[in-house]
Length: 241
Image 1 (cartoon, one colour):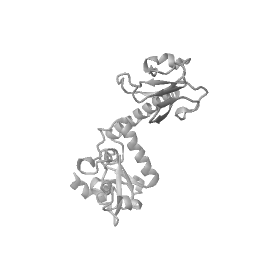
Image 2: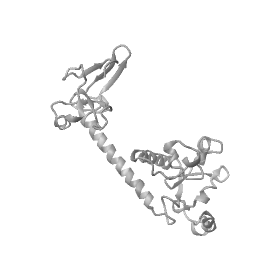
Image 3: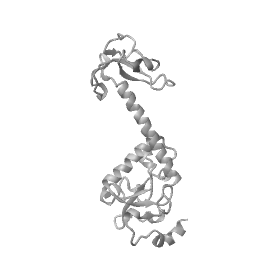
């Protein structure tokens, strides 16, 4: 396929006239941009950027040179900069990981020069989105919903202040700003099991005992042993479980 595309590169993709924002790159063309003479280009999620000004990172022999001349989207998350790790196939990533990858895309949009799109997994030869592109968008939407739910729960049950001392143990306490969330109530420390299927995993949350939220979510909350029910501060010794 690359051999065929090499023949039509100059004809179909308009390398001698079209504006960069409309420019389509083939995989074979993108491979030319791995040196300072031609420039250093990389692709992430099918979008191509000129990173030549970052040659101390992307130039030959530098840590991130493997990213140039290709779309190695997966490696931005896995950190695998060799062999099969340098691929644009991110189907193995979770929604949160795809969101982290999209954050990298925004970084390049902000700090480097956008040059066009890569014909392949995410864009067709006309620059239109492919089915894989839409799958990425679905995961991004899911990540956004998950984040929104987490933020809602943090506002409902703000994280406790936590301090560890080798002599006294761990101190959990609540205030009107614990967890960085301003509110007009203090609350009391409770163990919050956000995933009821993983009873060993919890976080300390500040809970308003006379609230509707507390009544509706009692199954997710547990008191710390040895701490008064209405105490705003709780100290746990290292030997306690």
